[in-house]
Image 1 (tube, rainbow, N blue to C red):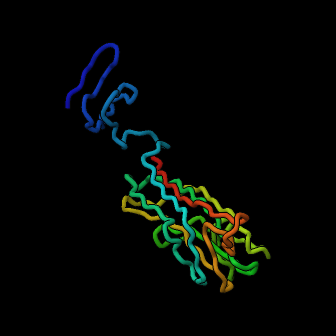
Image 2: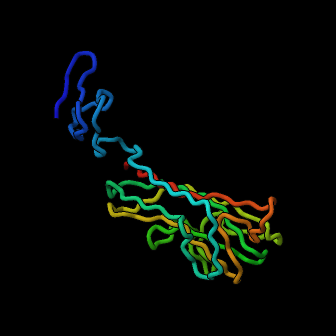
Image 3: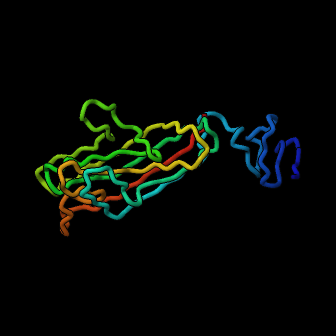
Length: 195
């Protein structure tokens, strides 16, 4: 590693060696990188995203992974927080379809309501009801998770139908080939935040 010290620019690193010294002032580094361990609380350490533009459908009464709507992140520190942002639209092909969705971190449901009797813990805005099968419901969520790991961690969307009909992600209930019907995009964004 080489560096230059002068009265105008201060300390300048001339290669990409990670600097971990407590004496290093990040505002004076014109090249190279500052180690993640030196970044302040609240800093964004990495961003991972996935988008989905095709349609997913299921008739299952069990929660089923939505194909192509998952993202994996490997936290650099076990104390890091993960800001999870999801956005998608869902529907059922009948007004009595009762579609439900949820978010999983690996195999654990996160950001869902508390269990209460026979009620299903699920994601906010997870239920759509309409007698019009051209109906579609937007769903989005933003929350901070604490996976407490440095292993690869996967967040994904699951969907199910409790009445034997078809649930769709990214299309209206009947998905009729008509200009009055829509196709929508879905996404998951994960941001590691220093804690």
